[in-house]
Image 1 (cartoon, rainbow, N blue to C red):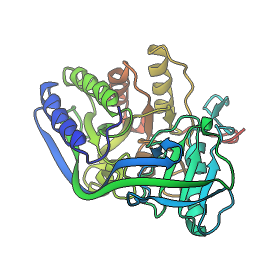
Image 2 (image 1 turned 180 degrees about the vertical axis):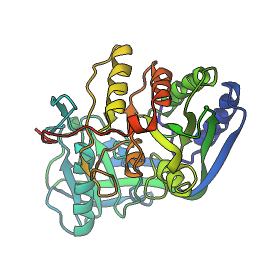
Image 3 (image 1 turned 135 degrees about the vertical axis):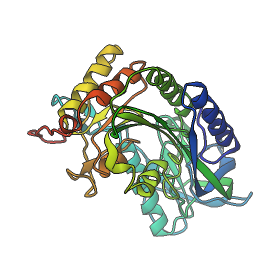
Length: 356
């Protein structure tokens, strides 16, 4: 189930998480409010074919929609048609093995939408293998209505279609939840997951189970629990960077490491973080492949990050492990809590290229 940012379901879910954190053994839970524009689709069609899947945060139409001829060439007045390919590029994990690039479809979708919007197309139709409203997760409000359809629609160049995308846009306030499991030192390990998005419910359950385990443990570094908003609304706000910016001077300097629950698995170039990631995956019975940061970003210490919730921590200079949902999460956090800061910050050397 996808939890849409700022929706009534999201508000209720965050309220429930706050109660469950207290029940897990963290008596003080703080809320930090962040304003945003909420986008809620109401009706989406591609006439004459029938219902379609809206591309999140694209422009809304009236009930009559917008009409034009399908064209893969970007030009004014048409309905742009783009076929988004399956992943064909690989990135390398820390063992040098190729893994499908998880960001490629996002890049292709962004490029297609930008190309059609710049040319003055009235709408866009994107053909993907598995249509999903939040397949594009950057949350940017765009000036062109766009829909996803599956490959079985048989769309043809020059065919007249009408894109209907009725949606509401409201200004709302959404929240981060912040809690602390204290340790014996002033250092902190962040434990984060998003409260919105396609996997939020299960990811949050994993974090709460880990918090209950950590609340009973003797910790060296304390654990800063961050349940963050805005995964699907990053143009407006993304809860992780919003928190890091707000607490740049008081909290960020105390962070010795961060663990983010999102998939796939990434680790920064720190031996303790990389080893912790591999052990967590092996204990969970998963493949031990751990991806390297590969997306260029001059904000991070090594000029690279990755598409996922953990990326902003590394852009803030914090050694970071992004784990998919595993039942060994609590043990991974305990390991990093017990590892001295100077050991966590020890870097490994990248000797092979990022792509193959």
